[in-house]
Image 1 (tube, rainbow, N blue to C red):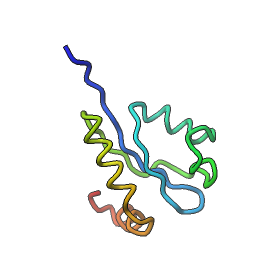
Image 2: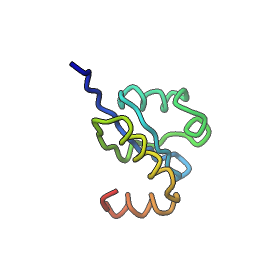
Image 3: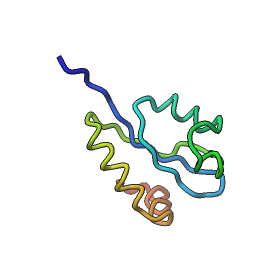
Image 4: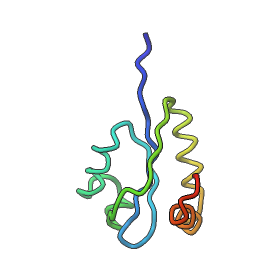
Length: 88
């Protein structure tokens, strides 16, 4: 039987108003890593304000494709979508 993992694409709002998009299978742990400065260069540099969005995927490749799609959006597009609660 194949082990079924859940993957999460998430968006963090940084202290400077920018957004960071990432992919993980342990969202709570990954967010704690970002808060502590160990999550990545971007969030360490820009600071972490809060987790503003996440979505679950049962397939890693689909989650990776979705992460890449969101990362391709401008900061302004992410901000407008999140502020207006539009479906990502």
